[in-house]
Image 1 (cartoon, rainbow, N blue to C red):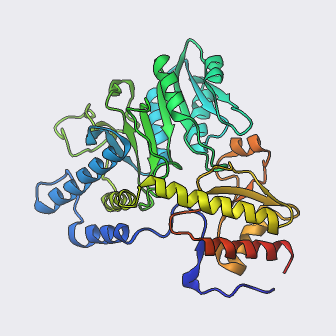
Image 2: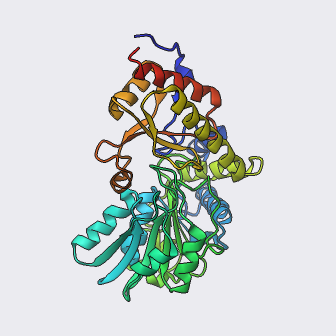
Image 3: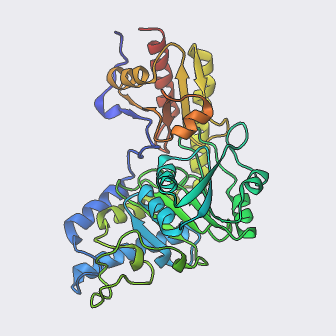
Length: 394
């Protein structure tokens, strides 16, 4: 088989919706700095290194709270990932006989905890289908609302199609109806600006390792300044470094939701990832423009050059392209991209089976290209040529 000659250090990485790569150098440097020169556990000891570790964590909370429009840094709850944060919000907020509204484009990080609670007979779920591309409306929310509706849990940006839900309108509707609004920002954080106060959001779950360019194993739940934390129970209890004379969990933020040692090295890197975005010209506007440019270019050229190409992504999307090629399985495409052309992509259902049922690609799924600020038009051209060769059997 003819292959495009590529050096290993020229690997093309198009799997940024799973985790972004490469990371900005400052992210890597901050992780090494902590591991090499600090290394201590924040809040557990009184010595200098523990204090330095505590300051790293506090400064990261401050950076994140400012990035998402929250006054108090203590309202930033660190977790392992967005899944961890969503489980805390779902299982911490929902109680017996509650009703929750969600959408047909949700990730399993939302659907699985909701389904578990529903199967146990604790809650009821309504899944909104939205319009022809899955965007939900106020009229659909009105029709779904019940007397026992407690929360709306929505995926801000689909990791399958890239469509973006109208968060401001949903937040306004939730406030009007006195409902808790939980937003899954695993895909949108670092791409689309979000402000909890302005958008009437009660909680945001975010992943640090995707659009925020932080290390894996980082994420968090950001709680609105106006949200009554008494409405949410902790998911776990344990050591917090505070109130150690008590055998009950602390009842204040962030300690009540942060048991166990934090991933300080990862948190240090996450803060630098956000600083990297803040230092970009026009900040997130430039991120959106770059990703949208790459997406449009790829889709337009693919339709012209690759027979049987079909895109399932929003035309105005922000760097997420799900596609298929007639006559080729998605696993075959991604295997050849990786093995023969050193191009990294993802295939399958992307942990979002409802979304694939919604767009008609279940059970095989799609090939997904997801771009970062480090990807280039030249890389897209290389991928287009590789796909053409795969399609033509060369």
